[in-house]
Length: 423
Ligand code: FCB
Image (cartoon, rainbow, N blue to C red; front, side, top):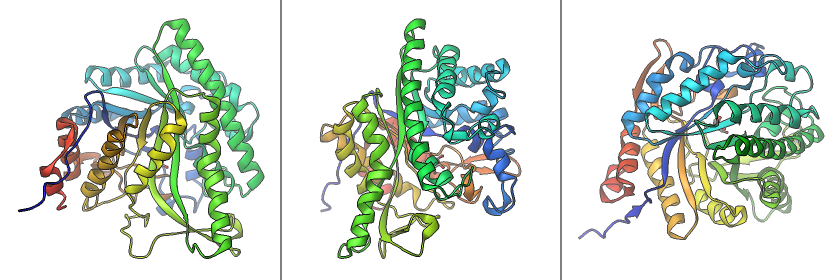
């Protein structure tokens, strides 16, 4: 007889959902730094731009209907700051109405929204004035955040101030592969500090506005955390660079927010593991080479698939955070959907086991609902539970969407789930 396979359950209040970001799906906003960056030759793979993306701006009702059909009860989306404040201090009422319609559509479909205020992109007027390095950032972002709670706070309770501050600071200001394409380590650290000040200011401004208006509000950061290990444990330089990368990239921002207690929940974006090699020849990449364990399974972008890492990060950060945790992103590029079913089940199993260990995890948002504009990688990587044909804008759920829908509906991983992934 076959041994019984593990049955894992999710509590009634646990949110199963998907995550997206404005620039990656909406299209039709020329006022962001990314719209300008994408027009510079050689910046984006294949010369792609976010000009149309998934045309979600016009098709959001169809996309909400897909979520509803799948029975996914939560969705993380972001507001396009540049659309809402196209000139400094100049808020566009029609754009705010648009997001009221989007959030209203989610409410009508019974889907709990989680709204991100800053997901990588900034308005061009800010980019022209130093962007994320501008010392006025905390004031500018907290004014935008207060306005958002004022305008949308009756439609949304869960808010993310900033998405992946460590990624936006390092890619834009250290590695130079995202706007403003600087190779400036000191500036990158200044941006990180500036984003922390901005987060604190946003957190306070949002709570002030919510309490004046009588809205419930919970706010946090979506932290990008990786598993970071030395490539060669016998090599002192690899161990030292691992410690430095762990401290700066994983630990610095998330640790500061935990210490300051300026969050009501901890958002965790988890993708992969890095094996760190100190590489003196890689001057422009901070002497860092990130490798993958030999023989490891990798996704379409070559990132290692390492589900156990999610459990490890939850063990480390949930107690430190002292607030509930949401998995605010987790997913992979997998065009033919031959890895996504196993990926989903194995990562969700890590979450369920963390719940069994008593950790307070409240939800899981899969990245992503739709194929989308993957920043400098363009449209080639396919992260969607739902395939998008960019010629016709036809949406077609991949098989993994049905599997995820079933887990969400039954709130469990059982024999049939393991059988579905051939485990
Ligand atoms: C994360 C970003 C998200 C998406 C995924 C694949 O770092 O937050 O926008 O690009 O990676």
